[in-house]
Image 1 (tube, rainbow, N blue to C red):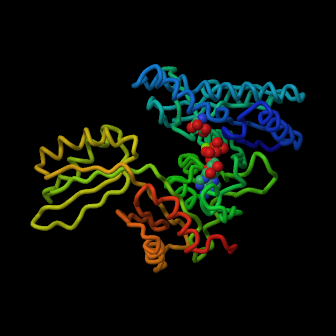
Image 2: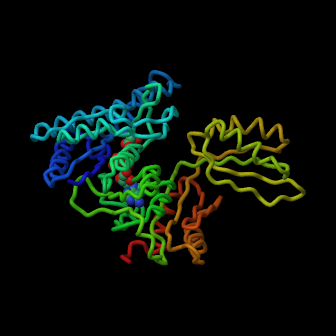
Length: 406
Ligand code: ADP
Ligand code: ASP
Ligand code: MG
């Protein structure tokens, strides 16, 4: 008997009818002789609505209370799905993250899974039950409820698949699989049959919200294949696995975009050892993730240092950086919160010249100004005006001929 872990996202459990229809799919997987563990997200936009509600009460809600509040969204959907399975004649039980043994650190709203005690899940499976686990949540050693960050139910699912030794983790969502770009922006985007973990991790990290980056990371580390497919159709979906990038194709695989970028520039910084750490250490201590960092070549030992953060972190980052800029005699500390990034990604680009030039010329043909550029071996990212991001994605999709089947 095989054990499979399935995850259904918010739009797949958005109302009672959808929950009933998902229950039928789960029942079919059970009928095929599988043991089934299901992870669910909150119904539709519940998480956004709960956040909104919290901010109507308190403009600065306690992160502990907010996590307890948000965790209720997934509890609701897990119980309803267990009820729907019961009406179909299947034995099912819903478990909260804590009941499923998901232990996390205490970093509220972005907790990391430290380990899973799968005992309860295994016992319920052995009783013949379908186990429905509330995604996105865990529990600390102090028994406080935590959440794993937006989109974190994917990570719950892959972590459970790892700890239970499942052969595959199936992520069911509102699109047919992983596309060459967000199909909402690019109607010509194609769904891919397979993809390597490495490429998927870059796509997810640089904005393709179809998968939570930490879920991909876990899949890669523990070699659990991840199938991304539609909750609504029977299309075969995209298999994310370790073998896909073995055959180097001379091609860009996909385009990711992220409208959530803010930039800080410290102007007129003395160019001497220790200056970068005096800025970035306090940012790290304040738990602010810095993405792109660019330091200009210095003239007369004076340089400019530019870096990007998520828009939601900009105010906090400026509070940290302003006094430091003053103390190191920098001339000015400026920010821009209306930026986005667009990335081309593909293992096929490795060690092959010409991709950067083609990307830059496609953007320049649209009159899109590139503010910053960063690269990895399999990715090139341009930071541009937020208002031009969608246009840039479409232009790049065309320039790299991604609408054409390989
Ligand atoms: P779920 O609620 O199932 O977790 P999400 O909304 O988190 O679903 O993710 C699915 C969405 O991701 C799609 O509706 C699509 O608009 C978006 N998306 C962004 N980039 C891609 C891509 N490359 N391939 C597929 N979907 C993408
Ligand atoms: N409900 C959470 C969110 O909206 C987690 C998830 O959907 O994966 O971010
Ligand atoms: Mg998601």
